[in-house]
Amino acid sequence: MLAEIQEGKALNPVVKHITQEKINLYAEASGDSNPIHIDESFAAKTPLGGTIAHGMLSLAYVSEMMTSAFGRGWLSGGKLRAKFKEPARPGDTLTINGKVDCIERKDDVSYANCTYECRNQKGEMIVVGEAIAKLSSAEK
Amino acid sequence: MPDKAISYEELTPGYKFPPATYELNASFVSKYLKAVDAAGDGFVPPLAITACAIAGMTKSVPLPPGTIAIHASQDLEFLKLVPVGATIECQIGVAQKIARGKMSMLILDLEISDKGKEKVQSGKATIALPA
Image 1 (cartoon, rainbow over the protein chains, first blue to last red):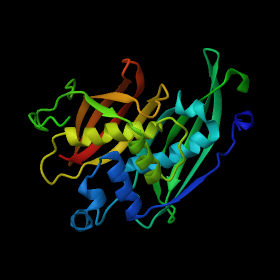
Image 2 (image 1 turned 30 degrees about the vertical axis):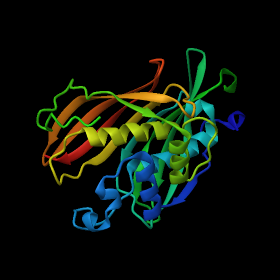
Image 3 (image 1 turned 90 degrees about the vertical axis):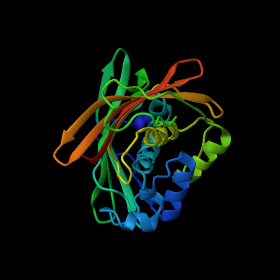
Image 4 (image 1 turned 45 degrees about the vertical axis):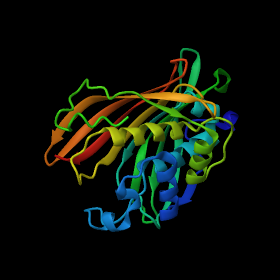
């Protein structure tokens, strides 16, 4: 896969359906049991109008896309910047798309600079940002 | 980890929360992988490590009762793979506190190290909440 990395290349998209069950599982696993994520009656009374997924759950899907494309060059040596624009909610289907904007070489190491976005089924932007993965020196 | 002795108003840039230690055992990793619908490879997913730090952070920051804090942005750098079963230490500090209209932004630095004190991850989280 790494040998195919070149500027302009689109990364394989990741598509995930958000359910309250997944949000509850994430809350239990992460220890982040803020009621805005898991307490439907509490969340309904807030300006958000209902429960929302953890931002870090959406980012886990971004990481899945980057891991699939870059393997260890992402897991150790990766950098991520994310802006959470809108909350993801139960019932949403999230699609994460990304592409390699440019490949840079610094101190004998090549890096793939990527941009990504995560949108829901209505096309609303949920998360947007940049991600950088380390490539081996042979990649460029 | 929670440091309830300090109030939100008293948080100022430079303040460091007491460090928190987490064991990233197989049970934790398995639950995390199930929650994010991913497969494991013997290492702790970097975002699982961040998840621990963020959860600890949300418990640490002494928000006024009833306040809804929104995770506005996140920067991360993954420096080292962490094997399942490792113990990590998370250090969270206040980098900036900004009031913008009716919102307040709290920018926190995250530093995560392994047992050998080697840094495995660093980052910055921005939390938005009503001023």
